[in-house]
Every structure is written in structure tokens, then in C-alpha cells.
Length: 91
View 1 (cartoon, rainbow, N blue to C red):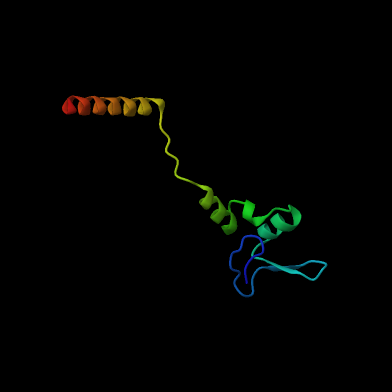
View 2: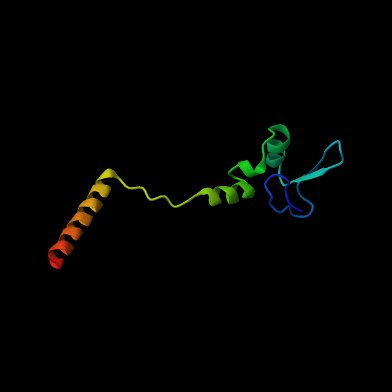
């Protein structure tokens, strides 16, 4: 059985089973998960510490290359220098 909030596996004989008025049973691994879903009305996929949230946040992350203005200037000057050298060798 898996937790309705964080999607972690619940060992047999542990956890809590919350039953709604319509008869739907929601298994929870801990009171933390139960409080977040029932009392605080949060969604497990939007909370970072859950496995559902972890999967979504890791998909959103992309490798961003952060460069300073100095690094960009140096790269531009090196490109200009290389182009000038190629021009001299070709002429």
C-alpha cells in the first residue's frame, strides 16, 4: 500500500487509514502526511519533501550556465583574437 499524500510505501501494520464520508479510504504513512492533506488541504505533488514533488522538481531543473559580464567579455575578446589570427593566416 502507498501513502495517498507522499506516495511512499507503507509497511504492513503501520500508518493510518482515513475514510471519507463517501467511503473512499486514504492510507497515510504518518500524521504529517495526513495533516498536510486533510487539515492543510495541500497536494502532495506540490510539496518539495514528497517523492511526487521531488520527481516534478527534478524534471523542471535544467542546467543553467551562469556567466558573469567579465567572463563574457573575455570570451568575446578571445573570439576576436582567433578571428584576427585566421584572417592573417588566410591572407
